[in-house]
Length: 381
Ligand code: PMP
Image (cartoon, rainbow, N blue to C red):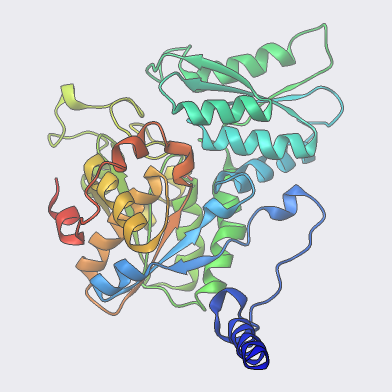
């Protein structure tokens, strides 16, 4: 009996090694690398099986949440720090500090990558940002300054204040330290890192075959950089923006104006005030959005409720635990798949994980019905 058991066990083990996808012998070995920056980029793409089956399309997600700092913003942080070093604006060992106004992900990436490259980081954020992101920033050793949400014309608005703080440090005669205002909204290195790295990865992973690309926009760097590169190589590629409620981008793409009669004055939302979706949606035009705007074929509107339902749907059906911006992109992808018809290949970006959104977005998403259907999500307003 022992011999039979041993034989069966050996058989079982061999079957795991050769046929279980987790141990697939054909998989290239994971790399051994020399430091944190080497853990940025080269993210996997996964087919979302539930959504693919239900739409008759192949719906893929590029898992930017697998970057070492937890989001696609690692790439932007690395690129803009390196560019600032190359132009002499940052120098390790001088006490230089990187300043940014951010809803969280960029701050977390700037702090993670900044620490690895020898810089301190000072983040200004709105006091309604999810507490786990604030705790994470503080744990990483960033200086965190919380301010009330305010209009972009207010000098104490979070982005404006970050710039002011950088200028204050640079002009302080008591220290040689310089302040760098990272300025992800206007900085060309933002869209360029997606053009030079994220997009070529996608093109190669998809073997050049893709019918549509769907993404949300915060600064616009992701959609602009990726759309620009992919459209140059796949001229018939459709590019679609998935936009959360209250954001002006939807109207801008579809009707040419940020605001229109669709949203009455009183219902206009300032950036990230009356929504549980963080990181995407804006009511002003940034340089990074304008760079790729003409490449966007259309925008789809996704409500907070739809995002909450989709987040739960993907967890229940596929085991994914994604953040609000990823859920918005997934709903957008399904809407576009329905417009295009079956048999198409679509790709979205899963930008960050649900772990960053526990107390706001997931507190609500967790309560959504686990029997939820895709039809119910699409019928929801
Ligand atoms: N997802 C998350 C989680 C983000 O934080 C951001 C940027 N704030 C985006 C998506 C949007 O990316 P981009 O700024 O390149 O438009």
